[in-house]
Image (cartoon, rainbow, N blue to C red):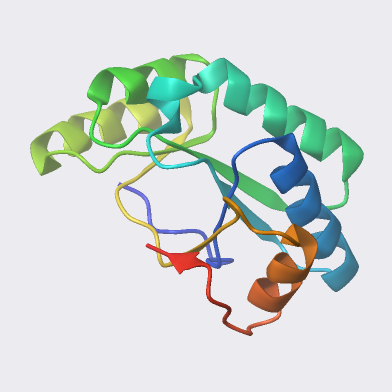
Length: 147
């Protein structure tokens, strides 16, 4: 299993608008970005959806050094699907023995499997996502932090 990327102030996104807001702020601040899907999004939205959201955000903000993580919760099939879909990094929070096998598969593909993340800013329901991202990425804590 892989350690959390060095730029470990994750932002949980729920769509392209959230990703766009986070990328715009990261561009303004000149900081790298760790984008994470909604919890368990692999089961509800799918790997293809997440890959497209990330691709669109990357195209709009090409200068951002971004790591994008699809949250697969404790579902190994979703994690395998995400790896097969070509995603670079997936989050799996299931059993440790299963995580070890998934990490081996990820390593063979040149991708990463995470089993935990630090606290994240969750943009669900945030009225001003750019401001929340700016506060979060600049080190100020606001009331929308989730684990």
